[in-house]
Amino acid sequence: MRKIVTMTGHASATVALLAAALPAAAETAAPATTAATPSAQDLRALADAVLAESYAADGPGAAVVVMRGGKIVYTGGRGMADIAAGRAITPDTVFRLGSITKQFTAAVIVQLAQEGKLSLDDPLAKFLPDYPQPGAAATVRQLLQHTSGIQSYTDMPGLMNPVSTARALGTAEMIALFRDAPSPSKPGEVWNYNNSGYILLGAIIETVTGMPWHQAVEERIARPLGLASIRYGVGGEDTPAMAKGYTGEATAAATQSQYIHMGFPHAAGALIGTVGDLAKWGQALHHGKVVDTAHYQLMITPTVLPDGSTQPYGFGLGLDALREHPAIGHGGGIFGFSTDSIYVPDSDLFVAVFTNSDAPQTSPAVVMRRIAAAAVGDPYPAFTRTPADLAALEPFFGVYPIPGGGERRFFAREGKLFTQRSGGATLEVYAGGDNRFFYGPATLSWFALTRDADGTPVMDFAANGELPAQTSARSGPIPPEAAAVAVPRAELERYAGRYALGPLTLTIAFTAEGTGLTGQLTGQPPIPLEAIGPAEFRTVGVDARLTFEAAEGPATALTLHQGGQQMRAVRSGD
Image (cartoon, rainbow, N blue to C red; front, side, top):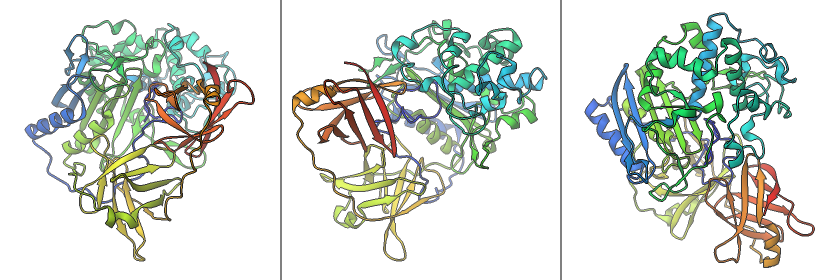
């Protein structure tokens, strides 16, 4: 999911724009080999190796915890909690939790429902009588499940800029940011990850308990369970064990991330803590120490939509398989930090990975899954790079339609292999033997190439190394690209500037040589633009196009065409 993260455990459409995103949507090509559950010594060696491979020692890094059967069997740290001070990350380092906060907020709400102090089917209007319709009709359950239809404030243009995120706002002021925004859908109709919903849940907690939402978390959860480090970010970040948050480079050259006052993420993402305390929390939540069995089942039940489809999300908890083992978890992302966690019930295994970068060298989800899969005795396939026979692969180059929409292209360029999914980045891929191909340690995705009964090339793609396989037959060669054209410097100057793209800013600037343009989305590296028309540019290395609106003078807006979507961005500055 994303490179500028906004208290979400899921990537939003705008967050992924122009990013060098990992391959998405597909499953693995062949069953993994089941191994024995590793010994504690072997698990420690494997986790240490994964950490060393995933994060530089002198840059932002990560802390990891593994708990099995209620006992911590591994903790580790890699990288720097404070680069300038030379302070290393340890298992006791404190991180911003981001959207992992949501499960604490949800648990307090469910406790209140269990105690009869509210009903999950109460409308928002019962607690906030002045809230406008249609959001006022959204139920507590719908707020928990992200089906309220209310506008998520982190998707609103301009609200995630440095001036906005630096503000110290109370609950009523936070709600005022989005209460009058048009609702994208009616309550209960659509699932859409929604930070505003959890701000409102925080307000409901405050109305029912008569105390700030974070104080309710402390008194009902953190203190009784002995979670000393789990606390509100405001003030809590002064602890000496707190990691600094970084962005950009994944090395010692990393810079500190955009400032955000921790009142701004509120009950959607404002808690901080250690991996060890999150493991204790997971043990308590999943073993009946927080809510009773019936209410816990509500928290881990998928959301059912009116059309009968389901969304693998309960109350502040996502439901996702790990190597065909049912699993429960949630990730988090906020300026300077990325986090992830998973609980595997059939192994009574909990793993959490916290990183102190919003653009980490390796996603915490990848590290978490590699360690968790090995811990349950079902590791992901390991690959060793082998020479690729480009001549033998020539018949396999081309377009592979993806079931459900889009396509993936497989091709060679300058002696190297690449794939590119619709709307995504061009990614180098390596031969791994036995007609299998992988992307390196930053992702678990891989694919195998075969032929069907008619001899047609077939790609079995694995997203995150999970079963079952997604099979795509080659539909034909890659169509030729539109020829590049020359655009006069005076015309390029009309396009340079800043454009508001949802909550982010897309900056169009000249290259260092001053001969062309680049596009840079907030928190992401600049991407070269290549003109294919007087006012139309393609993004080099990413399947996207930009068209500018400029009758006279500076362009007033642009439209980003990516992944079948069109997003208009209005000029916001020079």
